Image 1 (cartoon, one colour):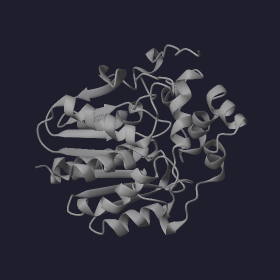
Image 2 (cartoon, helix red, strand yellow):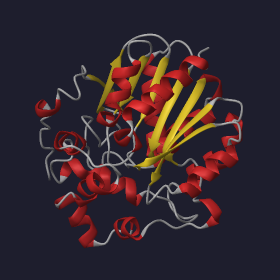
Image 3 (tube, rainbow, N blue to C red):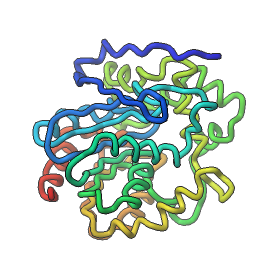
Length: 304
């Protein structure tokens, strides 16, 4: 059996100076950041990031809000079980979030900040619990099938998704998925320390399992395991039509293109939108100060 390698984040604590909190979800170690007090703001990351991605927002929001940022199972500082112990499917991710939030026993309605897979996971929770949601912030993500009815993804993702032996070795053995994101997901480029931080949890074959399984779980047809979950979210987004929505979008994203932005705007015509011309998929890395200011203002205007 491939064992889980210890993760060392000592070299990035100046960027990520938060206290680590742990609970158990389905018997698996579950890590999260929980800073500040006040109205709860839940930040849900995607693949191959972790709570480190939200560090600027945690710092900027925690003086006035309760900033919560969990690491999905298999990601960040959470446990990284074998596929025999955890199925790494979208349905399980949503269940995990529900269990986690019930354990926190939050008071007041929740504001969601969603990026990448966090969009689908967070909105799946939201459509099932609309009464618990105060507002939503979306950054380069989706909560619906690909726009235009074209069930397609970029070639590089399709190669990994189709579980070829070489793709498995590339992702698990050489960490090519997470490493390539360091150069492709940011438009302005990342500093050495930020690169180190983003990739720190994915330091061994075992610790990279989620980066592979997230891609393999992208549903492209009705027989795919997560198709029904995505369809449920797609069909029920209208239940959130009256909840304030803010969109902060990086223009230079090769996966979540402006077609996805247009679909969000179509689904939520009252949404407040900010398109960042000098940002990519890691929009929060490219424009942290601008986005923090916009989000803080938005949250204050829609506090309940």
